[in-house]
Amino acid sequence: MEPEPKPLLSLCIPTYNRSEYLRKSLDSLVCQPEIESGEVEIVLSDNTSTDETEAICREYASRHVNVRYFRNESNVMDRNFPLSLVRARGEYRKLFNDNLLYSPDALRNLLEIVRINRESRAPLFFYNRRIRKRDGACDLVYEDLDAFVRDVGFWLTSIATFGIWEEELALFPDIYEGCETKLWQVHATLKILAQKRKPVYLSERVLQRSHVVARKDFSYGLFDIFHTNFLGLMRPHVGGLLSQETVEEVEKRLLLRYFADRIVDYKVEHGNFIWENGGAFIEGVKQAYGGKSYYRRFVVGLYWKLFQKRYEMLWDRLMKRG
Image (cartoon, rainbow, N blue to C red):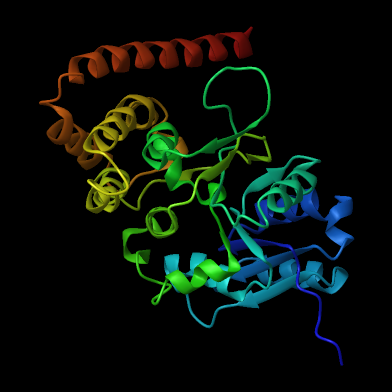
């Protein structure tokens, strides 16, 4: 018997208790013509969900030979991310969230990007937006890896930006190392860049958008993960892969572009999010950034964001009454 042909692309979807979003995500993928080409497989790695996830996954796996379903014996937490990649068979294995809706040409674009880089085995990064306004191609090649990290900054933490060539798994003697930070994808990206030292191919093509998730969960410890752990993963690479200036710039933009919006969420739309201790998050921000030269700029910008958000909410209520 001849061995089954290896897919060119594996779409690896770790999932847990998001059945209502997962079905819509899968529908946006299986309708694309490339799904039946033999070049694509979908790997569903279920972290012992207690909702309808198992039934949905088995339904799609029964209808499509290239949809493969795995259910963990127990909840392995963040280990489910690298585990889904190990379970795949493709030459290139791409992580995806389970709450994404994919653009109609997502698979065509993904396969094109993989083919372009198939021989060079360049690290691929899927930004899903424009880094800067400009005309021309939607893809960039970064020879300067420090500049790449500085430009993408916080988006290194996004699951859907990450993928790995099959042979790169050998770079990880312990594939689960880094999972304790809850940012395995950052650990893996920096390790691959530091060891391969190859130019990064960054795609700015829009491949997906997120569902609006009801009651987004921030109870995992927002500040500890996205400041302490994220920057902690970067600092050992200073003097090698990264410059100190890049780490400081990423830390600055983390405050001005991400933490500011999360504080607005906490203060204005508290009911739409799950917070274990939002007060600790805000206190952590104050302690870490209070002495920075740009902290005053942050405070002024934060008050403006709060005013804008409250005004928008008031206006919406008035319009609904009218």
